[in-house]
Length: 395
Ligand code: FHN
Image (cartoon, rainbow, N blue to C red; front, top):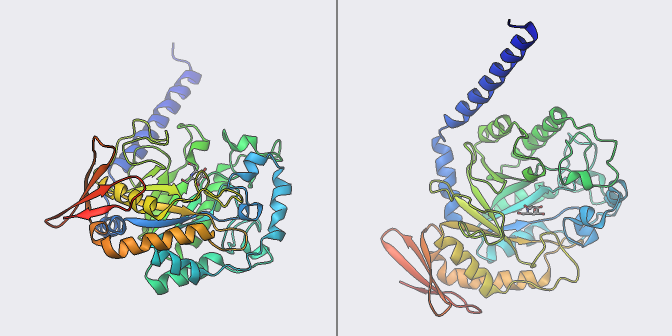
């Protein structure tokens, strides 16, 4: 006997399976267009970029996870909106330092997990720079300065949100005080908001949108990326997602957090296959152990370290995205600037062995040194790496 209820259930199951299969088929059928392949190549050729983590958290000077770590109530934390006034912010000066360091692009946190936006977005509840005493469009000024100097600008965008109540609570967001019992858990509304913000960001002409925070939800959570990625691709902009997973179709750049591709140094990329046909990017920190500015943390990378990290990444066919966290005044910390400018001198003399090259591998020598191999055209560069020294390029 076939009951109607069971029949309905079976139909539902078949429809559900069909939806999954069809959505997988549409992803699997994805073939990157010509502009996309060219943009991927141009991105990979740059080899060295500067990451910037900046938001309200800079005013607290305790790193970008301060809201979470301090266990402050979100409502209390967000009052810093009235205290955000980085009087020394100068986009041209940032770009001058980035360019002189030998880096070719900037990726800035347009909005980190705390939920505060660095541009006067029209689609949020006012949690953005327009409602601070500073008022200025930080991303707009930076985009203009980058354009003037031929530096590409990309936008980090947090999927996870500690401020908005429509964001569906996940493993980490559950711990944010002040949200309990208030969450609407309305992904349709949250996705509309993200699409609105991303559309605004695309108007600044970025090279890529760099997502982060997917890991707040289990694998089964459907972020409905298709619509988001299609919007980004429609403006000929690349997609990157720091989900610590293998690349999915429509994702253009594989990311490695504090980790040389294939080495799982930070523990985020265990068993992760390294893409052979997509650009790779390793991100890391200049102020050790933290992305957003932390007062009192004086452990900054030396120029020798920065150059060696770029060389090691290049040997692995990857870019390196070195992070700087500007302070509450809007300035890059002085030791970061000093290291970056010195690194720039090395790139001026040796950039040929880095930019536009293909990585041929990293050999670990028995005496603790390493030999990095890169190639441009027919020319192979052998780069010797010794701890504490600048890399030495041999042809
Ligand atoms: O939680 C963030 C962290 O603050 C930082 O933005 C890094 C950059 O790769 N990503 C996240 C951790 O995966």
